Length: 224
Length: 169
Image 1 (cartoon, rainbow over the protein chains, first blue to last red):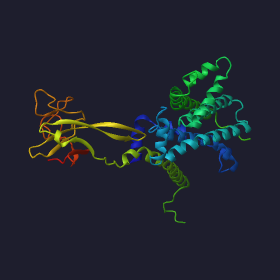
Image 2 (cartoon, helix red, strand yellow):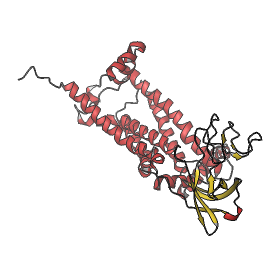
Image 3 (cartoon, rainbow over the protein chains, first blue to last red):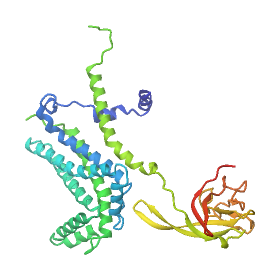
Image 4 (cartoon, chains in turn red, yellow):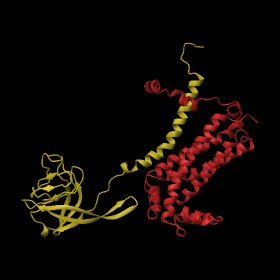
């Protein structure tokens, strides 16, 4: 049945090469943990991606209850944690995943660094990877404010003051991020929400796309 | 060896295993999220308290609109919400308390809301009409009679609860 549906579509739009190109390719022996167990270090990039998928999914579901408003943000989080079935699990996935994704990203970076896999011709991909790292850090930072509890509030006060210490453009940057020169409040929360949920994920998708296309174009670096 | 027996090839076995493990992981990930999302659908609706709405002495044979407020808990937001009912005494001096919500698409109906139909409830949205007892006038948009409030008379006061759909006559 499924095969028939697939064939019917494939007959018309020829989708086989599409997924073949993505999914069906040789994995060199030196990156296959079945051959050399130490090759598990090659998994960290994929694990980063896997956790990112969890973050995207759990984040999408969390916005079903969350409101980015100073009156209701904390209460909506409290409600989804205490009243909604599996609320603790879904928010827990997003909360812990945020840390795990940074850890995985870091391990992946270490592997690439110590194997020298960033060297020519893969310098561009290293740069894109560093940008992904920055976007991830920014996602963690902006997401931290959203529960609108005391910890979130004062972490953001500190963040905005750090941004304010940048020479020349500091005050402007601070206002741009916080929505107000002095108040950390309604506009700060909506801005951080918009950045966390729309701007940064958009940037992340583009960068990840470039990252993966380059891997396929250049192949995995050779054995040590 | 039994060459004729259908063997599971190494490739097939790995495919099945991978699909199974992958499916299990995906399910483990998605199950809490889906349950989380569909929670409102599975939530049992709470019964509301009866509220004193009017003195029995105020009631006449003519439908009158009475308003009262209830405390509505909407997830993290609790507020006072105004409810209303059209109340009158029928020919046996029994209380009739009708919901003002049109059964067509939920607008609010009025008694004698249309000059052409002074003895009917009228909905301004699509011209739905109901007789005095709340039964919908045939060939107007609504296809059911108005809901009736759960009612109780205590110490000369009328108490109303939830509006309930009546069974099809």
